[in-house]
Length: 254
Image 1 (spheres, rainbow, N blue to C red):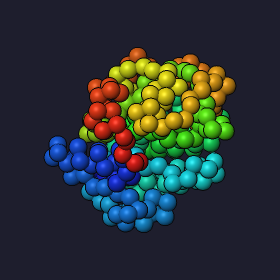
Image 2 (image 1 turned 90 degrees about the horizontal axis):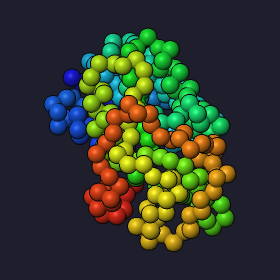
Image 3 (image 1 turned 45 degrees about the vertical axis):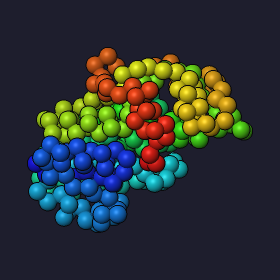
Image 4 (image 1 turned 30 degrees about the vertical axis):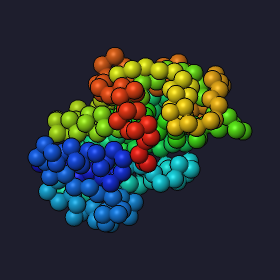
């Protein structure tokens, strides 16, 4: 089966391409550095020729409100248009658990717009809502600075290893379209502030993490369970401690 992976050279995409190839599929990494640009349409017709499935794990290079909205709206519109012309039978997109509850955030408004385009398209689809990745815990600290301290809401979340994300997305990609949302998450629940504190300690990062009920998450106010998947979520196997050991205590750059 030919599967085009949009964003196929990034953190999740590169892992996904390798896993699909290991299972005998023709997985093609599509990204600007491989000559495919979803914003301009460059290379899309060629890479989608003969593809049964398209998996979109791409992300906007800018998280500024207007830029991220333009990225997801334009790239998704172009993808769906070219997929229809190529006869693609399954569109898979990676999104985020809690997206519909995070509309205060410009980034999540863009993800909501992306999902709406997919749901209104004629192409059968599966939208995968993943929890936060272990690999991005330091990045979460970086965007949550107030002065010289990290302010995070002490709410529940259930993060997972990028490798488990790629495995779950791969299984969904080779299966039938669900024409709905599939949630995936990690095997353990934590408090956001608690786990970021542990991650920074593992990196010998001296920043202090403050549990702040008023702190926002990517610009949005969140409640106790906004970031937690439902009871029917598909869970990865990699625990945080196992991931720390496997990663040598440091995460790969995204």
